[in-house]
Length: 142
Image: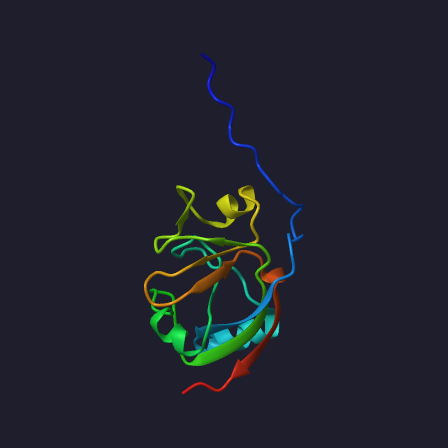
């Protein structure tokens, strides 16, 4: 018998085009130098992370303190951002959805604009394009 056909790619859009507008206020904690660079030049997707290289956000300033803990992470400069998460793929605590590990490429293949998952310390949203970050500002955070 012939091999089954691969699953069709659904809802794939040209780069830079989102499936829907879904703007959220989200938070990113970083060091002072990186924070100033982000405010001046915008976010750049990282190279690694639970859900692959992307731009990671928490849903509150307080939630960032347990999330900005990787070897390249820093804290002390809080950014509040308006982020168009578009159509969100909801993944499990290890960033798997529908049996696949989610990252930017898989997310786009599946017809989504961002990924959300909770590794055990609160929800995170990941976008893979800096164009989805609509605005940024520093906010006070102890």
